[in-house]
Image 1 (cartoon, rainbow, N blue to C red):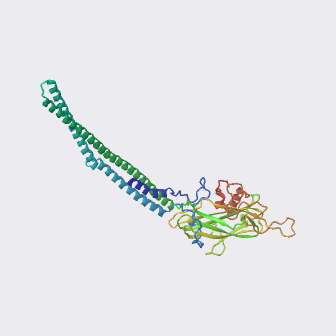
Image 2: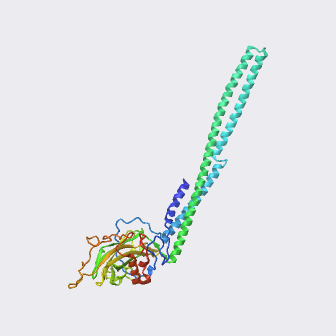
Image 3: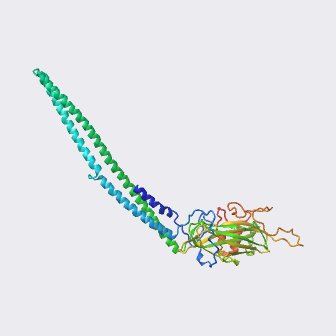
Length: 446
């Protein structure tokens, strides 16, 4: 029971350590299966007023975040305590085994006493059997002599009968003593076997506790080393969601929509950076329309519309509590000269904590929209196109790749020519444009 308790004590830190951060370098290449590298120097981004973050997020997912250094320190401490308990339990089990194998142990004393009693009973039976044999021999001698009187024969016969009764009683006593000796031996041996099993279990628990302790120490050391190097980790419990982005945006118009950032990590994130990357090409996919797009952001705390920074971050959210969300208003302006084309909004979020840990979403959430050319002015021969915007999900003769508030179908073909879109983004943004080099999350190539 003690060994089982030790194993249970080791389990909690060991489970925590199964999510030891697989830290990435500051600007890593995209690993297999990961769409959006995290770990840029987020601390270098310009400060910004924080949107409100006290509102709880509905149906927040169960916490499953990468452990912080403080959490890893607690885990290492708990693992050390569990190991100490396991070592003490093994010592107790070893002593218990020594005790039960000792001749002074009560069960060993009882077995020895019962054995002596069985040996004495066996001796008594042998004596009784011998006396019976002697009496029978004397009776036979008298009968063979032919001179014995009737009284002598009667006395000899009585002696044989008395000896037979004693011999029978001695045999019964010996059987009882043998049974008691056997029971005492079994009780002693069972106790010794149990002590052996407890010691074996305690040794296994100590080995498990030592492995957990070593893993905890290594995880803490690795985390501290990675934190010193400024590395960050993927965090899929930090999520974003876009609402209000129309399925169609007409050139010359402005649309407002909302980006919601939700902290499902189970702990407060000291500084969260929403990222917004919006790009478009013409229908051929060969010409970028990015120079004709203007994206701005605004929050309740900072109501003035501001441009995205050079890294496409929309301000910063301070102290986003566990289970809470914060909203960032976004505004997309499409220049009137833009031709019809395909657009995509890719959004994500990164975080930096005061303890040096950092990370972000491992992949973008992507939303497609159509760029509709502005209506031809009266007098032109080209038939006019529909002006204004149309919300995603509305009835239209044009195919719509997404519905309002839902993600684009990233795993199948889309109306947007992705290769050209990414290429146009790279041309517009230069070598620093992360959007152009990231793979789509469903495995489709960009």
